[in-house]
Every structure is written in C-alpha cells, then in structure tokens.
Amino acid sequence: MPNYAEHAGDLPLPVILGTIIARPANGGETAMAVVVSALGGKLGVHLPDWLEPSLGNPAHRQFFHSWMFMVIVAVGTVWSVQELWKKAEELEAESKASWDSVLKRQKELNAQLCRFVAGGVAAVGLGVALHLLSDARTRRGLAPL
Ligand SMILES: [Zn+2]
Image (cartoon, rainbow, N blue to C red; front, side, top):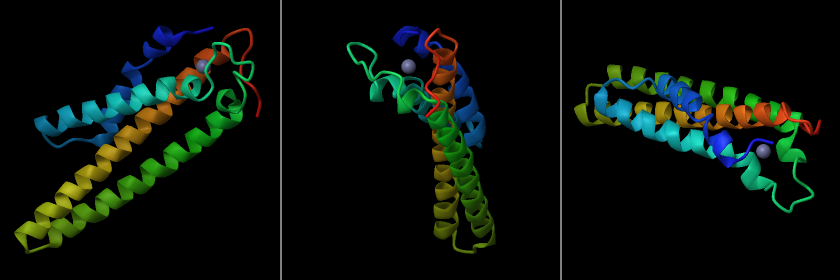
C-alpha cells in the first residue's frame, strides 16, 4: 500500500499541469503559478488519506478511496477549469475593450486570478487521481462506490 512519501512522489505532474493551465504571462506570474499548483497538488495527492486515514481505521478505502470519488473529482475538475478559463477570457476581452486604465488593469488581474485558481484546481484534481490510481494498483484496490 503506498505510504505518505510514495504519494508525495506524485507531486511533480500536478505542479506541471497546474502551471501550464494557469498560463502565466510573465516570469513573476510563472513563480506564482508554480506555488499555487504545488499547494493544489500537495492537497490533491494526500486528500484521500487525510479524509480516510489508513492507520487504525477499518473504514479506510470507502467513499474517498472509490472509483465513484475519482469520477466525481475528474468531472468536477474539468468543469471548474473550463468555467474559470471562460471567465478569464471574458475578463481579458473586457480589459482590451476598456478605455479606463485602472479598470483595464483590474480586469487583467482578475483574469490572471481565474487562471491561477484553474491551475490550482487542476493540480488538486490530478493529485487525487494519481493517489487513487496508485492505491488501485494494490491488492485491496479501490471501492466501487
Ligand atoms: Zn490512499
């Protein structure tokens, strides 16, 4: 059964995916995207075991270690990232159309914020999926529901 350190080893992929999804425009924003993705990925790769700890818990591997939970997280992640991207694109279009420099900058920042949140959400989702996939390869596998 994978332990804490083995699950932590899955962290690089969520960080890379989250950073790509956050699509930062410059160097400073890239650093922030990496931080947000690392936090999201850290949460994701450990979330199932934080919700259902394995030590001394006979209920380990119930709902939060199930294929159903993986499907819910996957659908929720894809939907959230799409909605946040749509909102970011709307804000960027409004920013370009605006003549007011303060309003323009505010909409730009809000668009980047949406992209950071999308990157963080994607990192959580991929982290949870990687955790569950590595637990699924063990003898006990995952619960169906
Ligand atoms: Zn687990």
